[in-house]
Amino acid sequence: IKIKPDYADTYVNMGSFLMDQGDIDAAIESYKQAIKIKPDSAEAYYNMGISLKEQGDLKAAIDSYKHAIKIKPDYAEAYSNMGIALAEKDDLDAAIDSYKQALKIKPDYAEAYYNMGNALKDNGDLDAAVESYNKALKVKPDYAEAYLNMGSVLQDKGDIEAAIDSYKQAI
Image (cartoon, rainbow, N blue to C red; front, top):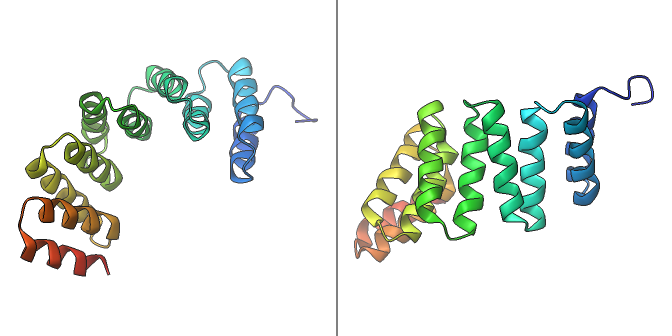
């Protein structure tokens, strides 16, 4: 920063380091500085969204993800993280749509299938949730959390045998 104070990527990297250190406020300030220098930094908006969500400011996090997507329309991770924030706000339909957008861009995105499965489960669509977890497992066969959550959904559906099998796969 001393050598090149107008280098936005440095502020993005500093923000990520500060997040890793648990200093969310300082991370957000670093991302803001990056955006001030480079207003079209999708990475800065995306990372600021992560920090704002961690801070509990879901509306600001969603807005930050939207900015990142506006700059970089094929930003699958921003769509997926926006889905997580939307789900935490109990806007499950919007969350599911956001995961679908991420998957259009990146069809092998296991975490987006997993998170969509969680939103579908919370929305009461248990069959679609199982399908989504299965898609996550096709991409990432060792995804223990997907097996665990699928087991829970199968148990809720009354398919105890399949639930036990899914739980065993998680171990």
